[in-house]
Amino acid sequence: MQEEYAIKLFNEYKIRTKWDSEIEDYYYSIIDVVAVLSESKILENIGVY
Image (cartoon, rainbow, N blue to C red; front, top):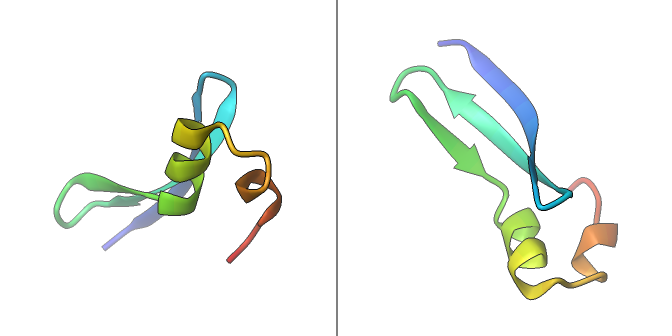
């Protein structure tokens, strides 16, 4: 199984993703998604978790 990590851009926000080639689907960082949807500046500064 090959693992690929990438950063996707959504309205100039960075959302971390992970590709799972076994099930052929992406996993998204919930922290990044919540930060984009809530337009929170606090969550953007969390960094690596």
